[in-house]
Length: 317
Image (tube, rainbow, N blue to C red):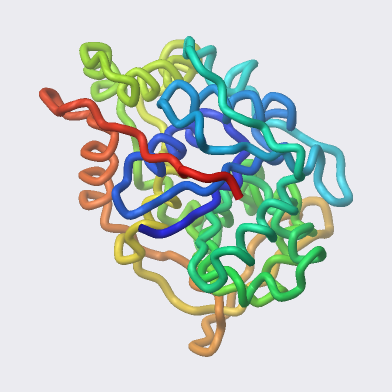
């Protein structure tokens, strides 16, 4: 199994990504690290712990990280995720797991050293924690086998401004540091994630399934379907987790990347120039059907599926 860290700003799709990471047979979650993004740091840390505990993954430790971007104030995305970031989901738990005293950047560095050359880090929020971890350990790009980033809008429009995707826009300076560090990275941006969607019809069907993973999907999606009244929403973060498990789900091209930090109207814009020698890969195509099979089967979302047991790390980093 592939050891991974999930770096999250747990809102709705992060919660689903956590569920997928815990149930995908290819992955073993070593730790979850949190960053301010969809909601503030305290809330995203609480949300992450709630989701893990609901899924029976109390052994997976959580470490809190950056409470704001490197140089800017924090701007959240509560209108899309609800006041608590989890769409008001009811997730009662019997046992709560640990929140580590160590900071998220420290945990990333420590785990990368422990699993040198094998660890994959999946970044589902602003890249502040990873940028800080690079400052702590300049060898981090060598120690980490692969970085999978849910971020960027390369050949499509953004979702927070016409040119920028939320995670990169939130902390463009951190994204620039991560790019310049030279990680072997796959950028799973809006070019592919907006194709992958959970529909109202499928959501309504989940009400009939009683097990924990189906209830998670149903509960955290309430805000989108009942309050925002959308007919579908994109599974941005679950796709990034799926790519960590099965890289063949996306095709892309190697490219040299840059992130605009100014002027304000171009903040967070991701630029790329194809380069076969580059370490960054921009995902440009996705096998949507293969992803949806993985998502549904791993989380037990098909009628009649047996309850899926969440995988968890047996030891904390």
